[in-house]
Image (cartoon, rainbow, N blue to C red; front, side):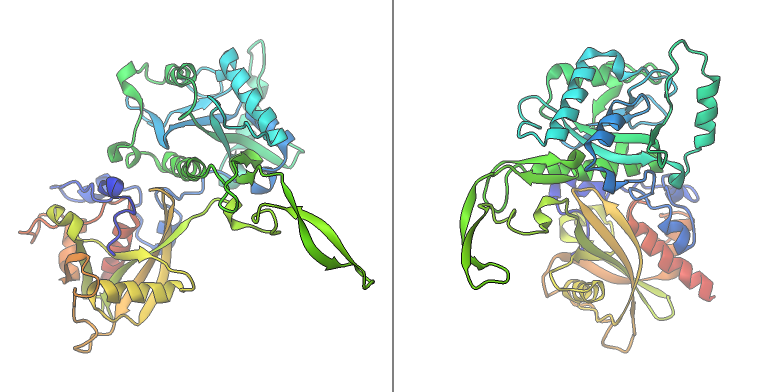
Length: 464
């Protein structure tokens, strides 16, 4: 299928294409104007590496507690997986901090007893793996990771700032755990079931730029989260994808019992404590047989269970070209034919498929074109709701048969056609109105689809 979204309500995210009229206006909104594949891989919207997840520390409840109450700890607020933004600020994603003087134009959350009680209760629930972790009006909290030197944090500068701090109560500007793991902790907090008081508390603590009440809100609008900085986009994507998983899973798929987040939101635990008698097992070294008790929940009976961890759905997405890169195959979905947005061919991978096999299958099912050469070139997290786009370049050997288009297999497309690469180059680098009487649009520059199409165009230029 042509990739838009696996949720029709969110499909407009991918087709929000502005009809730019001046030179290089596609890049005016782009967060990845680099030309090499290596540079694009390190500058992928929604996927930039901005924190060290230190996932092995999620199960250390003492570390998590120290991180959550630390003055430098940052928090990103969500409501029904929508982020809280400040429309009037240069950096629109609202990021909160525990301590005062930690961020410019910010006030510390720790000054409020409401917040102190909330986060301390969560720390206790997380430590005890309490069945009531997300009951009542408790928010759901996720430890995201540490912003540390591995992602560019200047610890020396922060240390110097601590020495120069002349405030009466000096605050640490980063967390130091065992002298080995040093950085700024980041958390996401889901306020969907929280009290109105706590929700309003977060809104009222957005102070950068002195915003009005109308400027601060939870948003699902593409014009906001496609307008984030790369760091904001990565933080939003990380928190959103985890929170979506947590919000969708409240009961064990093995036994139907309530599940609760543990390991600071990184894992789900079934609360079924019942046991059953296993038939019989041989006692080691003897012929005698004995009975043992095992968990009643089939999930708990396994040593490793993928239903207890977050999942990401793999989606292949492909720019299709010919051997000499003079042509690019683009497709138009029936659902969005009115937009005239031609995109890459894409679809979900199926069990037991390699990326290459899934890519060739999707190309043939959607367009009838036979593609034999597949190169995996880049990936992008796509948080709508939890997908990983695996970007490929497919090369078709034109022989009078392979390149023929046939839309009669699964009939999801309104059109598919081979475009001259030079025409698409003009739409990208000059203006989308050049040689474009049909007003055809290309994917949004923040999407991997745009990067793949641009890569195919650039490869043609390199061959000249």
